[in-house]
Image (cartoon, rainbow, N blue to C red; front, side):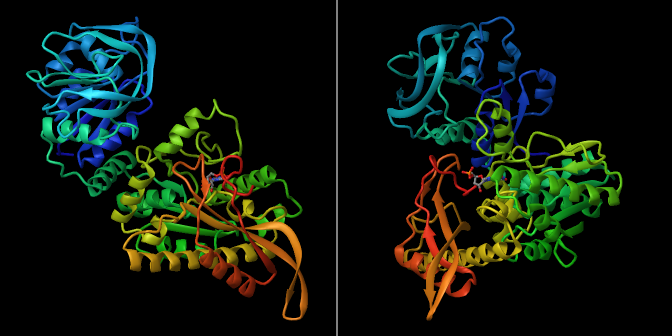
Length: 524
Ligand code: XMP
């Protein structure tokens, strides 16, 4: 694509995608390349700027990732971050050594005033440090522009050569004004106009998908969630009906969800693709009969999905590509998966399905964060209702019904959940009308679950012995920890009375106050 571009050169650091994301936030297009990319290729891309990322190594060690001196002599502004900063200094004649103590965490950094890189940054600013090594001697021509109590060179520059080095991480949110620093680099120093928008991502991805797929056939499992829907939208735009989407309705979706997905992607929808809806409710319910152990339920639902998908794939015959809606946080999660204990068998990333005959995987959203995926979805004309859908687990209502799943219980939880969402939407709308903003209690995820508890109640003059619904609502940043949301009591009361009046088989409503940890967000 013929547009200004910043290259992010990857030295293996954990925040590299975050660097790219921050650059995109400045409306500048960027691409990530390995540090092994030949200089000629870098030159040919004609970048407006280059950012060298952090990395786990020590740059003076033998075999550590390196960069050639010529990279700094292209006449293109270069910004080194952490490892990238140290490497720049070492390659250009400075020195890097191991410090006596590791500097880690939020650190007060003192900034020289009046520099281009730190324009608008106060003299004291909290930054995120994470390093063992430090720049003990700067390369010739450089001057210090930031320091800390322990680190004599927290940042330095050579304005004549347009080279900048920052020891801390401006890309992480713990660094105050970090995005402003990257903005100063890409917009100020590199002179990028900042004209890049999500539509450009859509355009370039569509073009790349066309080139890669040619006239091949692509198969995508569409769940109706945000990620697979946006992947479907992109692929449809790129290759039209060379794409086949298989949507398995396992009978464990939210109320009306199957029809909503079909309305968008089916025959009368706006996308050009082959849409296959498999109504597999009965199969699922009979497989789940008598099963109450949560992990067992997850396994059955997952395996049955594979069986259904396999059967459909066999009907289609050989495909060239299997598409997946993997997004960047999934990639990270699966990469770290080996280190952490399995609490619940989540997310189907990592393993490639071996039950479909295909040549290659395509993952058009692999570099995007969730909010960027949503922007791309809106760009593609996918309805807001679908784009801003809450996270919904693959096993669906199967893990929101504590204990055995039956069609009757699915109906109860669907109806209760529908009322819950309807009333929250109403309360949020009213609040927004009055105050012009979202209420602070607005949960990131909320849903009704059906407990396995039956209790005695009275309705009219009749004794009842019915199920209890649990309302869950959490505020969370990353879904790893969460707090119960403080939904106003009056709103909860309205929801309670509607559920008890309208949902047959339910006579009690609980509000779940448990935080995560020790609870999890889902009940199973
Ligand atoms: P937990 O219950 O683990 O949930 O605190 C954290 C987030 O993950 C979702 N979740 C799942 N997603 N398959 C999924 O695709 C699953 O089996 C699953 N279990 C939980 C949950 O909705 C929440 O957003």
